Length: 188
Image 1 (cartoon, one colour):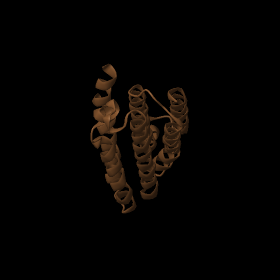
Image 2 (cartoon, rainbow, N blue to C red):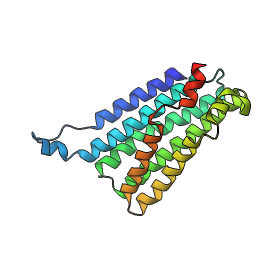
Image 3 (cartoon, rainbow, N blue to C red):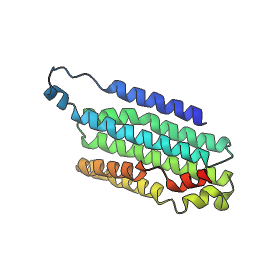
Image 4 (tube, rainbow, N blue to C red):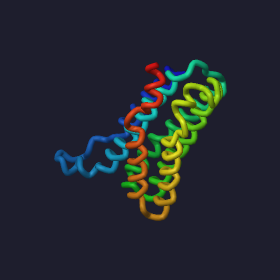
């Protein structure tokens, strides 16, 4: 499961970087005109990296994986696979309302898929008394991520796409440092 997920992540990052086009001009002004594409790329690269990093930690914190876990992981990979499209549309449209909202829908889907994967891993590795469940506790980061993405979608649709982008940045900032709860669990 880890090797498959690593492969999907590598392919998605490759797809995203191939979407970046060389500017037509020969000066920095022509490069600066592509700032929305580059900002969207950086945002998604960071988000994919964060999911990959935390996914790695999550899988090292469990002993059992079954078919249900594989399906929830596949849902997570599916949602990740939509990110290059949403990223390209959002960047090429200069963060227009609908593309920025779609990006939020993909991010909300990722948060939901992550939650399902976590809950399935907990259930298959001892339930609420498992080491993973105790390490995650109330799991505020997963719920806060979903909440911020849920706020970002209507904000974009109402014409405040910049608020949505701030929500996406806040989600990334929340997850930037690997989950210490899981790192401590894996270390012991």
